[in-house]
Length: 265
Ligand SMILES: [Zn+2]
Image 1 (cartoon, protein in one colour):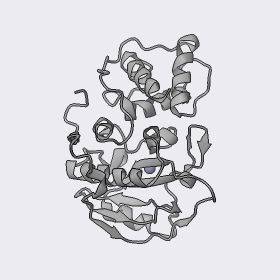
Image 2 (cartoon, rainbow, N blue to C red):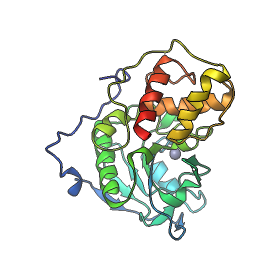
Image 3 (tube, protein in one colour):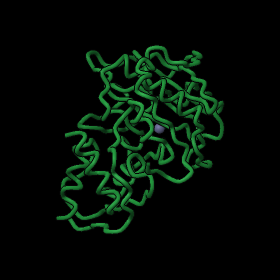
Image 4 (tube, protein in one colour):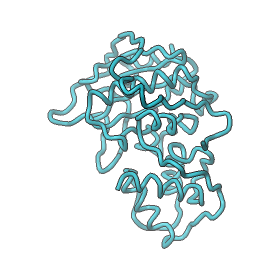
């Protein structure tokens, strides 16, 4: 088992609990948000986007997501105690992604469901997600996945689709544990090889850029390590190499990149 020391880990559900997502034990309260409109006709719901709220309290975040002046919303908010608030019906378009890109698509609000997880975030004191909260998010994800054609590779972070603007839900989110429970992708059996061996020249980075683009990131096909590529590498690391978020194409990052790339080919 790899992972950041001290990070709250979600335990894998035993395979004999196969019916887990049939009857999720979720406590959902409906509070509507006015920040909503219709999805474009004929667009599938095929992306699940995970956020943190990045505000000092959950109540403050919910108030903002329901404030017409803020013009932001999400489908769900998951509190630190594991209770869930539904702000927007899944059939409607919530306003959570902003300028965004994944796998050739932009404007991901059209086709995604957004979950906001209460956490102060990097700006206000980023802290571990309580295990009760993670378990509720995982159950919520499983129930959403049972309703929509969302492939595992499209269960992603806000930072994956907007790496230059966003860091959420960040490197403390247990993507590995979620994948073990059937939510998203994780390359099994790839230990952290550490931060040595970073490559920076254009020739060495060509396959790195190619793999990042095939996974889904917006990245130029050619060039040495520049700020734009470092930003995308940081997003990749927050999701798939949380042991060190350094924007470098180092040994540990390249091994996980190869592992994720294999899963999407
Ligand atoms: Zn976000």
